[in-house]
Picture 1: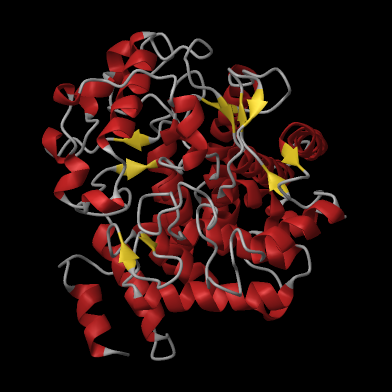
Picture 2: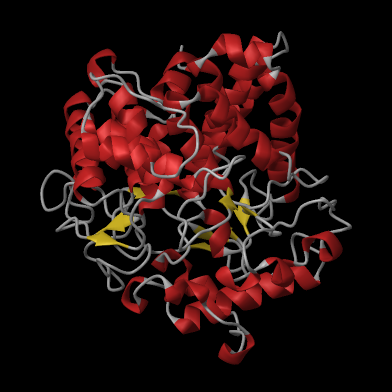
Length: 470
């Protein structure tokens, strides 16, 4: 074993969950060390400096990698997150660690005021959270964590605990967030979609009056370059949307921002398939969930597919029209098993064409159109490449028979993760590290790709969806 990596694993002074054998690669050991450094005892922070709490979709991705390090820790990660679920079913996008100073991150617990402003919606009283959500990757993560050690999972009643919470989470999204009336889920804040600063939000955000700059302090600029982060104007609009939502008691449907996003809905569909698997494992009916996933896929195609763009586009619900920006979100539905074959083929052509450049000008898929007016290779979600979106696309390519492209993308992800010190995101042309290094989901999904070899054509994503195709 690499001695530097050994020291990295042990430098925290706590018991190490993963003591790899001499056959483990240096990259595996380094990735495991990142997760060990971020472990708090009950969950994993995305970044000790920039993101010192627990984030919803980060924890789902982290658990997917953590299952290879310690299935018990992966289960605990998800247990901790879902323990903060609200009574209305929503899983909040941040679960705050009370030992972290209030000024370490903004918006902090005193901004969200979840236990008071969220009382009507059933916010928990024993833990402070945000009031918005993030993409529903959780059932997918739960099923994959179960598969890592089914004996441990059954002995601890892991799926029995998770299933009703996940079912309530999906009910909340499907019943409370169908703001467009077409069967798809809407996000009510850019932070909910996870790709916070995408140019896809510029048009609907332009209607939002920003909060005054003096009314908040941006803690993110203490740890990241202003050139890599959202502008003050955009941040002011994020704060205004969040505070208005809070002041309405986190009631859905009345805000200025409502967008149907392809990636958010595609991840819900993938998680519906996973929830069907969980139901079957528990001896419950699963066919209705599979049928729902297929209906949602049809709704996604009907409402968000744009033939002229060769991909899915976001839909501005308030304006009643598509948003003419090509973001990586519009490629993510490639991971769906019942996506029509001609659409899947078109997505692959778009991904490898001039707008995203995969296999040509870029080694990883950028977060935004290379030819778009708003493209910026370094600024948060306005062009840089991210490991989690590329992990999803690698699975989608593999699912739809694009083995060569999937293998090349896998190789690119692993090389970039190691060379960038597990960066939060990277320049899509040069792979220069941006944002935080030692980033949680970058390390976790690196571990997942290292363990799920492409020889069997089944990685973490295709193991769920491929099995449901027939």
